[in-house]
Image 1: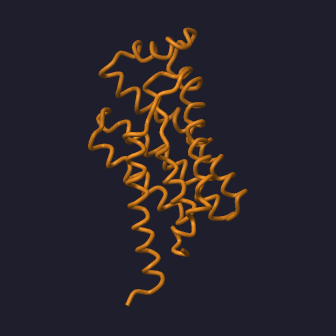
Image 2 (image 1 turned 90 degrees about the horizontal axis):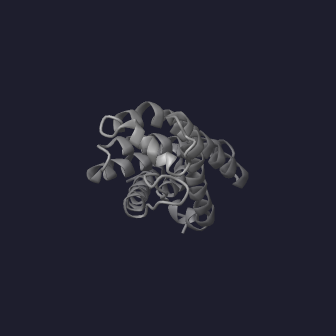
Image 3 (image 1 turned 60 degrees about the vertical axis):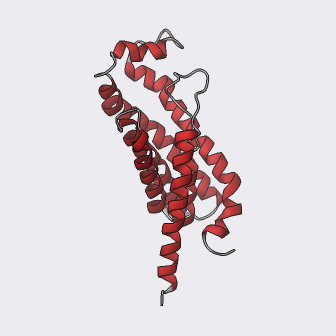
Length: 199
C-alpha cells in the first residue's frame, strides 16, 4: 500500500507531465512576434506552466517542466537544438529562482518577489547565453553583419552584438517573463488546490 508521501510524489510526477505537455504546445504553436524587436524574437507563454509547477510543487519540478518542454520541441527544431538549449537555460533560471524564493517565503509577496527576481536574472542570463553560445553558432551559417542587420533595421545606430543584446534582448526577455508572471498570478490560486489534491 502506498504511503501519503509516495502518493504525493506520484501526483507531482503526473502533474509535471501535464504541465510539460501544455508548455510544449504553448512554445511550439503559441509563439508570435511583436513590433519593435527583430522577428526572430518570439513571445510565448510556455514559462507559466513551469512557474506554476515551481510554486505548487517546488523548483525541481518547475525546472523539470522546462527540460521536458524543450526536449519535446527539439523534435521539430529549426535551430539545430541550440535555441531550445538556450531557452532551457533561461526558463530554468527564471522558474528555479521564483520557486526557491517562494519556498522560503510562502505568501503572495514571496511569489511576486521570486518571480520578478527570476525574470531579472533570466534577462541578464540572456546576454551571456546569446553572446557566448547562440549567436556564435548562428554566425557560422549567417554572417554577423546579417544578424546585426535585423537589429539595425529597427535601430540603425546599433553597431555591435553586445549593444543589440542590451537594447533589444534584455528588455524583451524581461517583458516575456513578466507576461508569464501575470498569467500565473491570474490562475494560480484557482488551480493550486487541484494540483495539490485538495479538490
